[in-house]
Length: 378
Ligand code: CMP
Image (cartoon, rainbow, N blue to C red; front, side, top):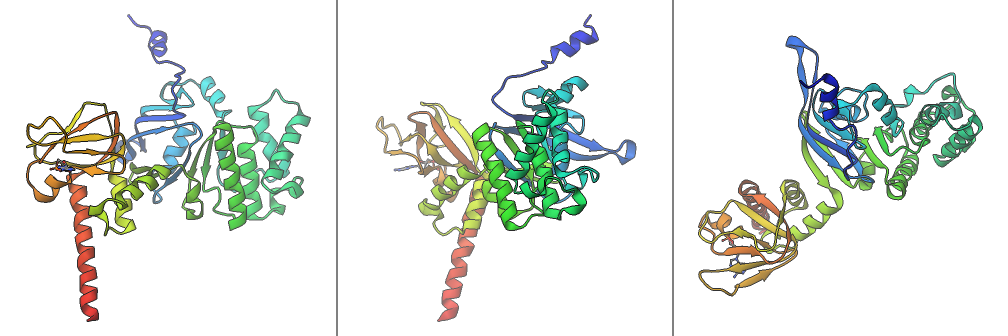
């Protein structure tokens, strides 16, 4: 018989993966009985160390719930959630306490202590996360951190003597002072003017680049979108899109360079990019077989493919990075007119027939619009 202890041991207490955060099938509910309401559905997410993630979505979409689950402020009810290699779905209280020392929270300014000075408020994070440091050292580090957020001249002020933006910067200093490996921030720049917002964002970026700190920011502030490596959009408790920003820019440029999409608006291109599905294909794999019916369109991100027609042993074409295939059957409704095989390991992005048709029809309506407007001018 397996004892409870054995059963607990079956779950590893620590897992060494490359991901800083790994969510598998995470669901969450509030309330009980008839009032039980599901707020997160089947969410899967894998975040690399050093990434800056911006999480967006309407209020009530579940983003704060997801953030507080990752931040260990709520217990995982369903699914697996690994944070800094610890299983939050099966961790004990001591494990949680240890993990929290490696997390920096930047929530709303109002959770500063009114009776403490800015330095004392910041030092609290060090008292919890680095109790081995002397008080003098803790104070020194707190002041250095306040200087970094532009508050070197306000270290002895209490929250009541500070403006909204200054209080927010104290909260930011407190979230970073203990050099956390993961920073969770809820609207960190909302109360800040453009310039202070930039200072804070640059500071976060520096931590991510230099120290591989993973940073998740929940925000509606589109002035800071450029800092994100990745934008995760939640709607109705589900991750609706999860875009690697730099990769998305490359893909959108590639699509814009394709003859068949040349009339698409940047907005339609962006929507297409949102629906692309990454597919890794080993050398020699047949991706499309002549005579089959068409279901997907493919864009080549890396690698090359050969196109064969009929029984000929020699390919009729060799396609590479930025080129596409599989459009003919989708455009004509005819079977695939050739066989396409990976000539080396490829990274492809595919688009479903439905999304491909949608993009083409938008293009058609765009062309029609132009024709009509030209016609109207005559
Ligand atoms: P489809 O017919 O959907 O599937 C096979 C694909 O091979 C076809 O779309 C084209 O994208 C591609 N293809 C066929 N013939 C050629 C060719 N001569 N040059 C480049 N690509 C081709």
